[in-house]
Amino acid sequence: MADNFKTIKCPACQKEMHKIFIPSEGINIDICLDGCGGIYFDNREFKYFDEQDENIDEIIKAIEGKEFIKVDESLPRTCPVCGARMVKNFASIKKEVQIDECYSCGGKFLDHDELTKIRKQYATEEDRSADTMAYLYDTVGVKLKALDAERERLAQSRSWLKRFFDHLVGMDSKI
Ligand SMILES: [Zn+2]
Ligand SMILES: [Zn+2]
Image (cartoon, rainbow, N blue to C red; front, top):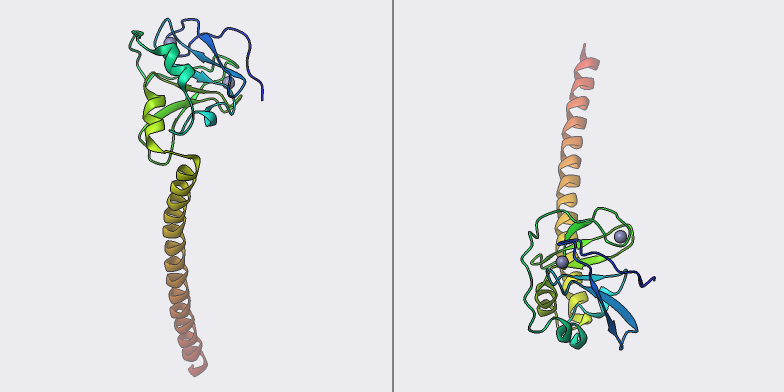
């Protein structure tokens, strides 16, 4: 994983972002302190901050009491580190908060307030995994059931066709 060291421009409002050092993880994250309050996480950094039991004191300290400009969160964004077009994805299977992700370098951009919203969803990494597993089980389970029904339907029409052909052959032999 590469923590980027150069100053990057906010993908939402184009202001220069500030590097905030997180001692517990030994990494820097980029926050748009002079603009929209958005936060950029390099590849894999985000997982250290997305649940309630993880410490974000440094981030809170940095943004506390500041006024941030409003940005249109629906606009497409370009990754400030590698220049690729970012993709909007839901932060979790709860589908409540959409964040911008860079599939090229793995960076993630969160608009102001999104971090707090995302952290409210799960207390711990275990809760998140359990919820994801339950969701997968539900969707995959439903799909498997549909497949079974389809297989059953095919088997039935096949046996109907077979009877039909047997019938034809029977007719044929009678001629
Ligand atoms: Zn910004
Ligand atoms: Zn990127």
